[in-house]
Picture 1 (cartoon, rainbow, N blue to C red):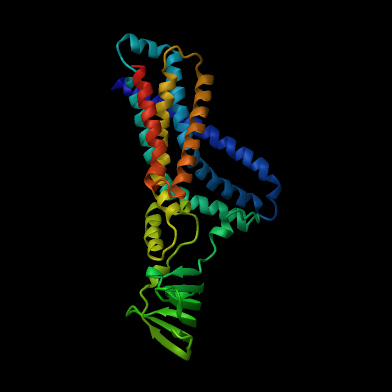
Picture 2: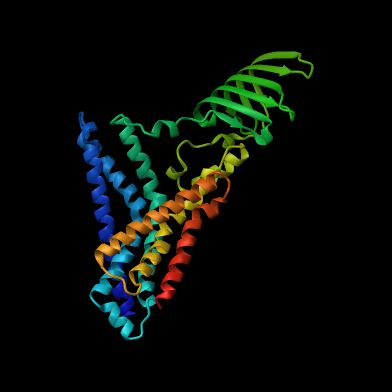
Length: 358
């Protein structure tokens, strides 16, 4: 147990050092790149708020890389001080060093998953909002936060155009198209306002209704107020703007269910739902592979070699993740496999590599 705690402490210290160093370097470089846009009254306060939120996001994003770097540095440190040689002389295999390191990586990965689902989501949105509203650098903020106005009803029977959201679940500037099974327009309803009724119906105000017959005849009716029963309740239009990465995991799950009901694409949401766990835990399989490389026989070099190996593993992992994501979004892989596939592949590779060193 004493050896386990000793190794775990060194691994945790290496992770903290790597994380702080990389986050600090990123913030310095980012400030140097964007220094020309920070101006105007109170710019310093806004910039500090931006970088406080950005640091939170960056720490989450580079945590897996910091984990595998910590694993490589810890193993290299034990080899440099000959402690690993002494362990092998006592009959202790590489797993006695790997187990505490991986335990630390698993705890850190779990903490980062919780951290990402609580603080990072809000920090990401806040940093983009500050950059867009205070420094006029919108990026993807405006595109991802436009109100969604088109919705498809159940089984494609209706198409809703809801131009503006009103209070208490109401909508203003409403057009509803009813479609026949052979995809012909059977009715069009235009209204100034659509208000949900406690009974489950919808109350439309300023109504203009056009009905289209099979032979091309048209019937027009106008009314100040009229009630309709639609299959879609107010929750069916609760599509949230923003990227799935900017939503908590529970919200992403809710959006998947809503989007399926409305016939909207959900591939990126399903992938992100899995990725909110797969990504922060990626440091465990990547760290295992880094340990296997650092503990291989006849390895030369220590810190420099650990850095090179960590960079190489990071590049391989993100390449694998990029390919898996692209294939999942294209429908060639399931969302679960697209998110967890790289983790599983690196876990197997690390286990087999470390087993060869036993």
